[in-house]
Image (cartoon, rainbow, N blue to C red; front, side, top):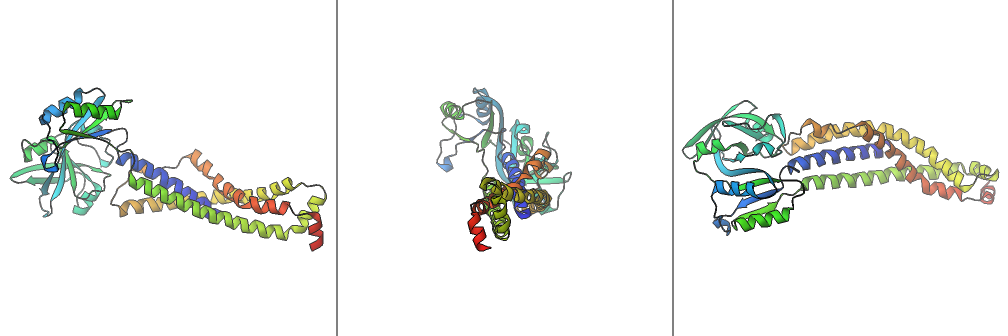
Length: 349
């Protein structure tokens, strides 16, 4: 029962952590749709509007709240031979909903943020200076923040940094935040009608990694909870056989089968409550070991609120996990013992 309660606690913690991670990774509530500029090399119709015109067009459509234009380009980091990817932002980049685990988000020219995996791979820290280059263009920047993203070859910077490297570069996509209640499909139709060279796509609110981890945790909980319940089942069966004479005596003085069932189930429920109380600290400790290990394996740095997910009401509810497991495991053999007749007991005596 301790094992079962600990497993339920661990699974609940993993589910809350991964739900928070998935919402942050998909930027739920911050980005609702991404509008891509068509490219002939991808067999798409190029937009008939210019870069700045597209941004103005999107801002003018009903339902638009924020627009962030970004361009993805390959560049080099001084002192490192391998190319990296740069994402350069213009517009309302402060509303993207990126999760910063150290430092802060971009505020102006000459600043970059990078995933923790990028910094660790190159021995860098927040506050270090970088030199970015692309062709003959060079730009100096300071690392002002580390993000949760697990990409090890990506930096994000203000659009002015891109202008210093490659003047005249166009944005490749536009991330749009819509007003509450806006019909995303209708908004996409309006974008396509305004310029057939724009290709809008709804931003998914579901992270596949989150779904996989929660599914695995739920399955593990079900399996170990079943094992715990079977252990209770076996214990109650043996207990009923050992107390066969006592049950017969109790029934002979008027105890009903329902009362016998209740007596045996409640006796195990008390042990289940004790198992729940002991299992919760074990589950919390396992969560604090497993989550950082998972994050390290994935090259992620999780913020504190994704690890410290435990609250008093939830822990009180999880205490009942041991009781539920005990009751489920004890009910069937208790019912079977309650059906034993007095004559059968005397016959065996």
